[in-house]
Length: 169
Image (cartoon, rainbow, N blue to C red):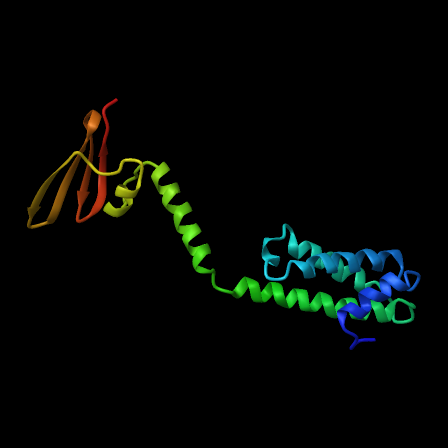
């Protein structure tokens, strides 16, 4: 029974429903639902919990139980799902996924203000955006910039890092 293909096991649940206990029927249904989501398993809410519940149910079946051969087959399917999840988790994100993440991060930055320690690029990507004008001073100790914004707001940079924020209240 261990080497039967998955469809043979599913047929056994349809043709011979008396073979498996109600518990194993629900386990089989849960495994089947998860198998249909292969390739997207990490998007299933609480996937690890669901798999752990399936594993726990299957480990309860004793070798002397008439459902034991079915439990062994379900355990094989469980292990295949577990391996698929681990493989998905280690798979690098697709180009589309990376683009989506970049869009979300850019949107997040645009909605945030500025804080001391930010790089110029981060300030430009923030809700403050580009200044109206810049005053640049270059000296022995590096380059100092004052960015001038509307409403008498100023940002001060030393060597491309935001060091001070001046706002009118």
